[in-house]
Every structure is written in structure tokens, then in C-alpha cells.
Length: 153
Image (cartoon, rainbow, N blue to C red; front, side, top):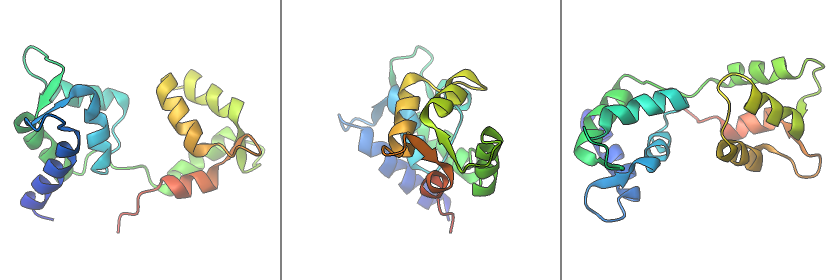
């Protein structure tokens, strides 16, 4: 993939959120734009990236001409790659010592909000809406991982 192709992908993703068609987007949309380009930064990494593309005096908006070179570099360096399926599976298995193949909704909420880099309320709701089987009120994590993994080919 060439730099020009990366530029087009970045511009296309940016334009989806450039509602005023003035080459700016709301800073709160940057995470969504970056993730739509196949990157999975942590909240801390996202915060650092935003600091890099923000104006000296933050306006709440990000200009395309500041975003483009930073995002091009991120894609060229293959930063913030998604975590491979086998590693995700091992992470879930650690949380499921009895090897049931699922986690109850309450267990998942506890792990995701009280351990490591805690999920925000919004992130938790987003994950639950995608992960929880409403009939069993649990996450069958092999199915969830299969749904989440981005096919690299």
C-alpha cells in the first residue's frame, strides 16, 4: 500500500465526520476515525495522539492538515495493531479459571471496570451490547472474539 493510498483512506475516514465540510472534526470523533482505519490504541495512546494533533490553544476541533501527517506515520509504522485472536482468547481464559467458555455479565463488568485500565461507562455499555447473549446473560467469549477480530488478509 502506497503513501497516496494511505492519504486517501485517511481523508475518506476524516470526511465522514467533517460535518461542516471545512476540513475539521470534533476532537471527540478522533478515536472513532482512528479505529475505523484499523487501529486500536488504548485510551492513553489516544490521548497522546490527540495532544499531537491539537492546536496550541485547543479549540475542540482537529484540522485535517494536522491529522494527516500524524495518522500517515501511525499507519506506515503499523502502530496500534489489533491484538491477535489467540492472545485475546488467553486473556478471557485467565478470567475463566474453571474453563466454562463464558463469563457472566456481572463478572465481565467487574473485570472491565475494576482491573487494569478501567472501561468508562460508555465503553462498558458498548462492549456489553455487542458481547452479551441476552438469553444466558453471559459472554461466550470464543464467539465474541471471532466477531471482534479484524481479518488482516
